[in-house]
Length: 92
Image 1 (cartoon, rainbow, N blue to C red):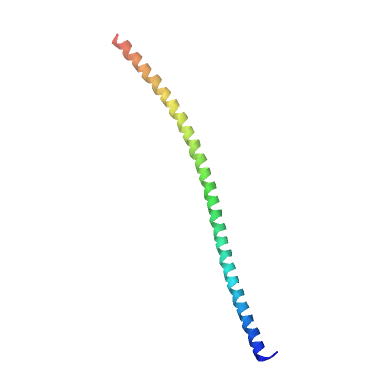
Image 2: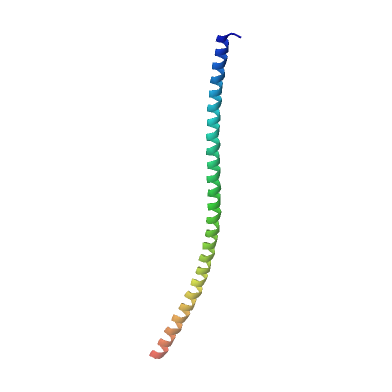
């Protein structure tokens, strides 16, 4: 193999190495973005699970408060009716 052929082979090899390095860099960036996206997705799933638990707790508390409100409203209505009866009898 003569010097010109060797120089050409070395030049092609360098060009191939440059393309390989570029491909490696692109792949590394894609893998990094994929890992970032996977991490972000995992965080979003954790947040969703936490929010679901909080929502369940808030709904349970809301139902409890609604039941307490209904009980208190009934008691107040009975007390108001009793007071009206007392006032009506006192007026007679």
